[in-house]
Image (tube, rainbow, N blue to C red; front, side, top):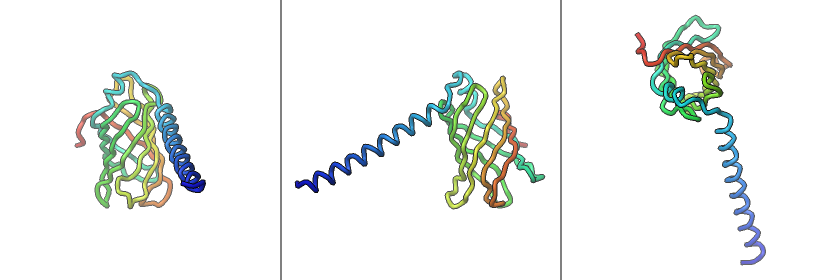
Length: 158
């Protein structure tokens, strides 16, 4: 292999190492931005939460269900609500910022729909209720939307 071959191999290895290093640092930074709440708080978050969402500038109150499957340093959940166009599923990821403050980023599970945003929830002292606000991009309005969300642990919607 000549000098050109060594230069190419060296460039490829350096590029791969750079990408791997950047990914590792981003992963560590992502996990460090969330706190470790008390174990009982994390465990109480898992499961199904039901309630309502209300968008600002809309008189529509929608039923919502959040299914939290992973509640550790990193929270994973799915948010479901019904619209005139059908059932909406939002994939979320986030974490605790304290024992009571939860931050989630959401994105529509249908990759063809442009819908994304953030939710900030406050978990009650006795972890049976959560309430908070959301801010994001709504596909129907094609604009920024915001509103409130109120949830109760485990009670089915009527």
